[in-house]
Image (cartoon, rainbow, N blue to C red; front, side, top):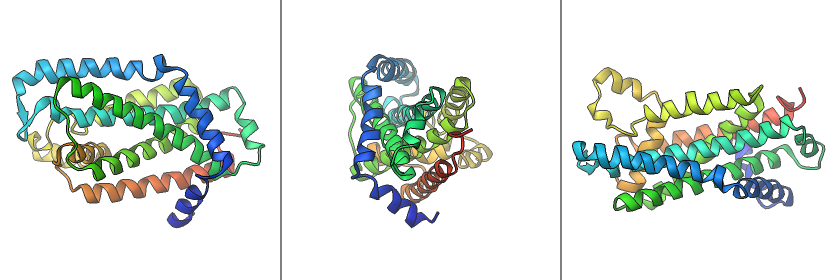
Length: 266
């Protein structure tokens, strides 16, 4: 499936009744459980800002002339947004497989691109909501501004679309709940923590800095940091184009996997 056909297939579904039905069901599912959806990241990030921002920040003071607590805020927003986008999409797919109600969608008149669009957008909504709430928590601890609104919105959409798409792959691949936990806790989160959330790449030895540039999280964290602070250690335009291309490729992969019934009919 070409890039253009993937984009057109996804966009064409956004106004359909089927898309709205799937997306609304998945959005209402996590909105009905705020204690599971919103409370954990809020509590976790209060701890992050308290320990790393306030206590540790008093010793570090600034990074690249930015107050340390403000420097870490974009990375924490990224961590919360992508983790929740991934978790929502992966849970929706795997839960539907586990309880076999996803078969109802597969036998309905819904197209595969409609189903992928619905599950993906629901994950994006959850990721963006959590990211926004984390930014609000950060505003309690420090003054938060938006230096580049376009980049902040663009990176916010791209990274949540990307990880909602990865979540669908995870939901199709997983054999049990432990597989999903492993992907989130032992793959996604470590990559974020080594993606420049708590430190500047300039502080690393040359070899480690070069290796860090292989981590896609570096570009996500710096992209969102550029949106908030107007400062980035990598070119935000290149980062945005590469991440957008990767997102489109994963959406195309998800549509193909649905067509082939991977993880759905086995």
